[in-house]
Image (cartoon, rainbow, N blue to C red):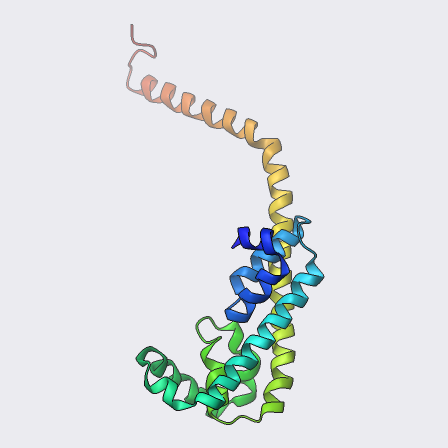
Length: 187
């Protein structure tokens, strides 16, 4: 994914978030922390991709309906589970499903089948997608910044750490030999 982000940038991110999203968004935000992408454009691309993707799945569900699910046993299991949840807490589901792995694509499809009002879905989808994109962008960017500072610190002390490990191993070897009354250097 990193290759595609480096090569195609925001377009790759848009397509990735249109289809699914979390991993590619975190990687893109990480690359933004390294100065390879702009974090604001990363977030904007993710918002656009996820909104359009979810709207597409919503309308596919509205148009294709239950006949699509009946032909696919794996989706049918998820459909039964998600439709029961949606019936109980529609607004909460719309706002949170994208944060639950495995429900990102089936939930808007299910919402379309269940005839959730299209404008309601659009408004809540925009709010939730923006929250999601900002959250994962901040997560990836922060991860990148922390890793960068840790690597710089790590590089400064790696030689000292290796020296300490070598000295510790040598000391343990010496101590073992000493406790067994064996000569330290066999001749």
